[in-house]
Image (cartoon, rainbow, N blue to C red; front, side, top):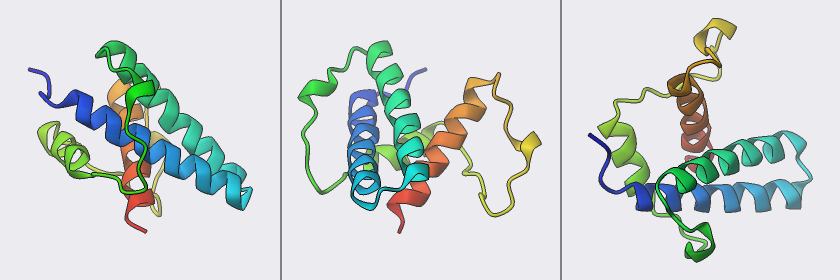
Length: 112
């Protein structure tokens, strides 16, 4: 069964990308820029898969994180602890591990 609000989730992820990307540009922060690109690619992949047109996403300064947390809860995703992460914590051959890495970044970036 698929999470029934994927369009809202994708819009939230894309809105996070826009904000992180803007902050990375303003601060000239390369690391943040790379994270923004990872989030963008994730949003783009989901948008293609679920037929969501990112051009029509409302661009606000306010980000509705409710769909994000609902998606996390629905899929039982546990955030990574970036202070204690080990190489073996992420298997890049597994989509679930890659998604966990990305949503963990989204979580930490939106909580500061």
